[in-house]
Length: 547
Image (cartoon, rainbow, N blue to C red; front, side, top):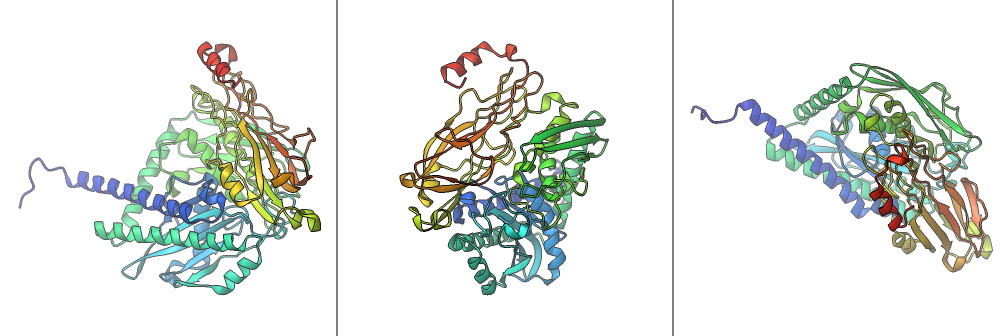
């Protein structure tokens, strides 16, 4: 039978089908992530969304990621699947197998992140891999904080192992897991959640392949990679060629930390050299190289190719040269528990370089690093005099983002991590603490033609004002977010007690009985000359009590 002269060409139909398959793939991984959120035990996952989920081909190349999740998890998880395959090749995997690690150098940068990889089978043949990462509340050791002097002090270290073998739980693994944490029920439950969401992704993938009569993902993968690579290279080609340098400062731990970058933009790639960056720290603020690449690539991609899907091919043109002995290339066994404090400054550093090339496409600096105080109480803090039961909890909060060229920065919003702010009710429900104040911080956004986003004011006490402890992991106190193009700096952060007592910005400290923790979160930097700001916007901010 001859085709109708009005029928679309075969190539056009194939392209339409590929787009439908791509959309279905995104739906599969997003459902994978949402199932994790709905089943997770840790508030860091189910309330804040500190996770990632994605699908990979049998060579360990990421095809697609869930929209839900953080760049640090997604982009470093993209590297981690290759490490799983090096130990457990795809041809040795069986249906019902689940593999797990929290190795900072084979996973996503610190021990509090669990990464699980699961094979997907169709008609008895392995067709793909699902992976996810989640930040859990506790893995033992010193807890989530910068005090460790090696990774071995920071918690339970899990190599790449099977946690489920053909659907059967590895009971030896779970015995060790439960024994190594302050929150055994939560940690075990989170592992089951991670495995369940991968299983759900695998089922949906098989349904999709059955519907389209697909025997493998190879053809779809190559189509995705080719289109993503072509689109990314086209965007890079539009940039001015040259070298662009920038630096940014962190409060550090023992001493301030300086991050330096020299970005070289060529026709078909962007190379970033971190020569001149501060050396390694003796405390847990060091950053494994995979986490450095994750956030640096994200910062570049936000400016250069934000509309191109994030996958193996679209990130390939962004290359990092990270010197040995640099705080951004921590070797094992350096402490890395709070690598986000330094690592989340990297998108601002990348934008500092790109501002010289495409100034109308970058933001001013923002608060960047999450303000997520780990809180602890009970006998492990107060001994026999404890008035609170033992507890361990982390609450996620954010300062302001930097001003944008045409709009103000966002108030109390996490960038670059993208996690959600945790409701105080969720934290108070699982720990004996009370949030007495959580409100926007007036005047904290840097002035400018567009102003920076506002930080927050927070006051936290133990129940009945009992003694508790905070493991401070804060930054942007001595080095507030800088404005651009004449915009003002954002307000610096502040850490102390409600009576005015100043606390250290990093490290384990006790909040005495009758006292409360007070946090002033930084505001984002402003953009442009403040005298050019629309008077109507000034009046609006004044009426709203924001300035």
